[in-house]
Image 1: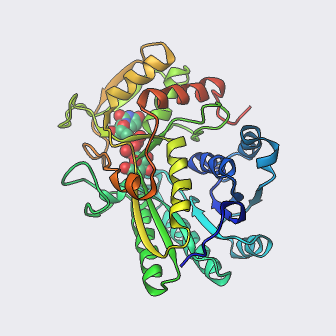
Image 2: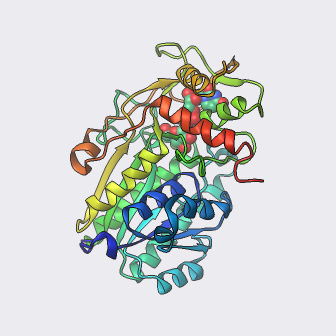
Length: 351
Ligand code: UFG
């Protein structure tokens, strides 16, 4: 069982805390009163994120933040962090996340994502810290038999190595908790996180050509790309384009804070979907973003993308009833905040 602690007395290690979801979660944790230790190797994030977090939360809260530039696979570095700081809980975001790249580089993806998790778990155990929230994904549901997806919906085969790493890490954590009842594990299955902090200071900063819809749409809006490529308009959905449950990253971040409060003093494994419960099509997103940026965004219809499912959206009843968490923002809010971030930072964190 995790030791019951007050927020003021709880130190949370956030791996990948300089990344897109990680940075928004760090802001929420600091605003909620937690002490936060970020471990990030900055392989897919900018050091500037840390200054921006300081700006958002202010001096008092930023004193509760410390940063270690390290790869979670680097056992010695991770042990040094656990020796320096009395870590009570861990939120594990660090990992490679590009679906297409994972198909090209399966060895790297399995080695990094599974390897860093195993190193982390072993070092945690060694230091008597057995509470972890894992950043999982709706990708574990594969092509759904029925919608909305509840936490009881069947896990299906993943369609790429990235998805398999999420699937396998869920299994690893479940086995760890089964073997040792002192472990306290929460698996958060995210639907499609988009948006940015309303301040416009932090947001998503993909390297190269964005793989995901909203970062691509945002680059079209800012004039960096010509038109949105819509992958398929012959799906069995209201307008033929793929449907997803887009969730504001600030809501997602709040879901982690709710999970921390919920898990305090518990043990075992629990799974929560984090979505809004509303499905939006690709064309719905383009329309909402066009409204947010004040111009019609051009798009072209392309063939379907391999591995994409027709539709998925979450049933979030469990998160609401158990943790008292519910998404607050709708698609218009998400597009407004994505646009605010993109228009103020057209090159992301680069000057
Ligand atoms: N799409 C386009 N054009 C693009 C990009 C995407 O039409 O340029 C479409 C896709 O076909 C899909 C929808 O937009 O219908 C959303 O695609 P994303 O790539 O934004 O997101 P996915 O649903 O494919 O994947 C996301 C995360 C994964 C995660 C998965 C969980 O990127 O990490 O949700 O369901 F595993």
